[in-house]
Length: 201
Image 1: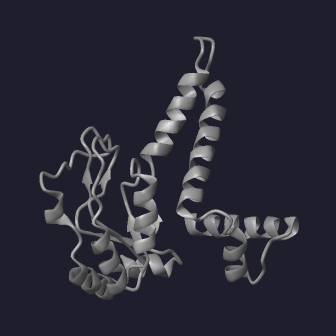
Image 2: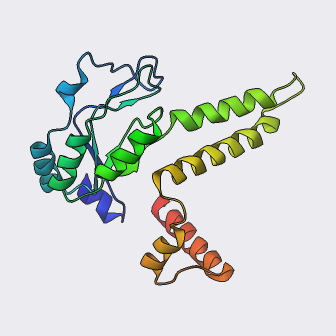
């Protein structure tokens, strides 16, 4: 799978251990009685990364998909150990509902990417409910409120994770410039669109 992904210029993320689902999670019903039995083992993580060649590794350290009913207890020492054992970025699934302190500590210990859905999804639904004042509203009337809510919640998370204000750095690293002028941005957009069309043929 990794070879196929890389042949198309794509990265691939693996997952080791088992990230369960919080009770009532719409995406699944894998509620674990004793989640620590399924936490990612650092030694197995190294072997897995070395043998598969994945570009990033999602780990199980007390996190779960969906909304938490009780505060989760992340195994920060395990995150730190795995981060010092493997040479790929670590990913935390099931980030919605974690405290700001948990996020900051997880990132400090070695998490590079956090997957968030529930918090953003809930923000969108809340905005639509607030906008839906009477039955004369259609879906077209509600979409802008949801889009703005998703934008605001995403920006909030980006600031929390310390990933805001990095566009110039990323563009500078990948393109050799600190920013793109409108013409360069248009050209980049055309190149990306052309590549997507080529891959879909």
